[in-house]
Length: 224
Image 1 (tube, rainbow, N blue to C red):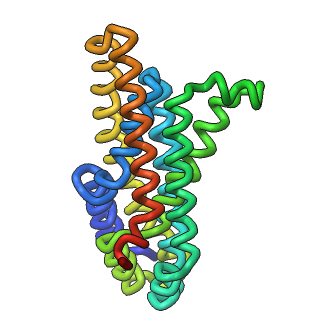
Image 2: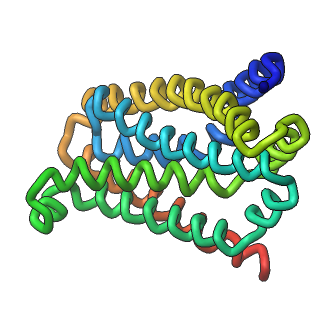
């Protein structure tokens, strides 16, 4: 039976990670740029954030399961080529989101007539959330190794990771939701001219593309 005090501790750590920690720093620029760039309505923005965070939560459950199995297995996974593949996939998805913001949904709708925008949004954001969550940063890896020590089984590790993930989900939803609300409120009120709105939209798209390229090529830059 998982320790109740440890569960609360992990939830608190997850909450702090999502509110003012590495989880917020990694995910916020992508989500804010995407939501602000496509000028989503508040309801749609919150839905996009929830889909992304759900994908990331699923990744944490997987990592917690591996941590419950063995710390060695977790380290092998973290250093494997599979994690690099997820980083590449995450970078590609961010670039595609940037292109989507740049072009708008009309070109995509011509290729797929049935709710192309909604399908693209939900699927890509969920996969991106999973891809971002599955390559752990140093603080998260240290936390997962702690889960290895306190869990007695793979399911126990996944249960501990669930509480950590719920903490990051709730705090991430609050933080990113508040920031996206500010940007979606700001855009229509201060960018009243069509030219200013277009420049803002293109700026968000370019930022997304740069973030995606950075995620893909950053490991290679460190090798130089």
